[in-house]
Image (cartoon, rainbow, N blue to C red; front, side):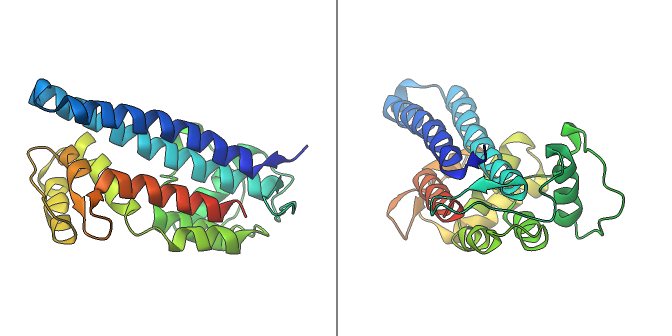
Length: 214
């Protein structure tokens, strides 16, 4: 029986709901949390949100390529429908890096590309030949803030001159951009919503996911 893309969205929503609850609990703790503890907590939530988004993107691409049911009731297909999960992961990685697809073999899990990267996702969705590629590409077209989630996650996990400079360069897009640690981006204010940048990331992921499963 084909995988339901709607079930993938439900799983994503459950993960996000758990993260949202935790994020706002730590926000309310405020001054009661030591700075070093706050950085660790914020970094954890940023990483978990990024992983949730990346996992959803991976599942949508692979399941769509192998044949899944959409919200509109259609069954997806692709030229790779008979291939295994990790063979499709191999194809996706080649597409993500603009490389030709020659001899296809199962890709070891630890060699998979960064599934949540919007630019790489666009290359994969454009080239893999899924019948619902238009829906997936439409979903990616609403992603304007998720790249900053990736920036925040990478800078928090790999603090260095270049990653910190990337975060500082992003300040021009937001307000109240105080920062002692890259994870402080979650508290920046998005001028489009007058809410935390964390909230913009969550909403954008949810909107993109809605389009992807149509």
